[in-house]
View 1 (cartoon, rainbow, N blue to C red):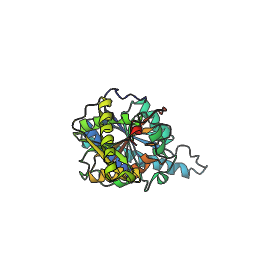
View 2: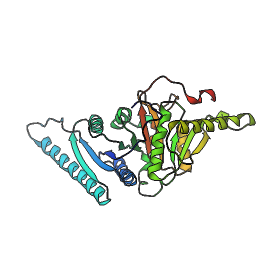
View 3: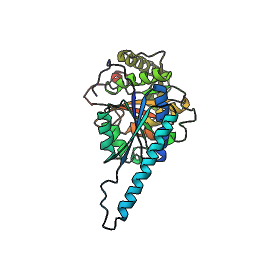
Amino acid sequence: MQPSMNGPTPSFRKVLLATDFSAASQAAFQTALGVCTALQADLSILHVFEYSDAFPPETGRELLELDNFYQTDQSSLESLREEALRAGVSCKATMVRGTASLVIIETIRADQIDLVVLGTSALHGFERLVFGSTAEEVLREAPCPVLTVGPQVAGLANSGRFEGPVVFATDFHRITAQAIRYAASFCEMTKSPLHCLHVLPRTLEGGSQNRVVPLVVTEALHHVAIESGAAIYTPVYAVTYGSEISNAVVEYAKQHRARMIVLGVRQASMLASHLPAHIAYRIITEAPCPVVTIAFASKPQSTLAAACL
């Protein structure tokens, strides 16, 4: 995915849900149904059966257990498909043997998927996201946006809580800033307002000498919106303060009952911004709403905010 601030308006007609039937995946399924309903998209449900490399001994006991696992997973997959159809969502379900992350990425490319939905049961921060896991691999390698349903979202997918704005958080990096087009597209399809958010250090909060900084940042957010070429109606340009970027973004989302958070990330390192911490992962695991990440190929470029920070 190459940076192009004035590329075509993103559309989301094909949604892929990758599930392992865990509680986190069930929350992701409910979110996927809501997304498909709002976007009038088709849903594909994929389950990767990862026990296929087991070699049963001569007794055949393990082979029988493996077959039982397979039949149980197949039944669970069919149940999800039937529930989606009852909800009025066009749906197909597929079970494939192999390594989950590889199969998911291959399916995205082969089926030209527009949006992937994943669930994660991580509890706190990047360290608990199970580094090197399926979720991490897909977030880093997916050629399309990934909507991740974190542990704080479980049980809220059907509560009607996600009725607020789409929050686009940015550090003004020219690569990651282009994710605003995706945020605008979600806003248009879900009839939600767009909040463009930037987090400033707490050291800049308060004091008459620091009043000019939020004004400059607000103008920079406006510039990002204009430069994107996206159709954005009455966006909110918001500036907040925090010693920890991820906490500030999450708190803003809570206060405004955000429908979702949208982040542009650099593909090579999966860093959400210029900061050394893995901000995107921390936001995913703490956010009260789904988080959409769009990974872009990294190129050495300056940030728009360099002149004002």
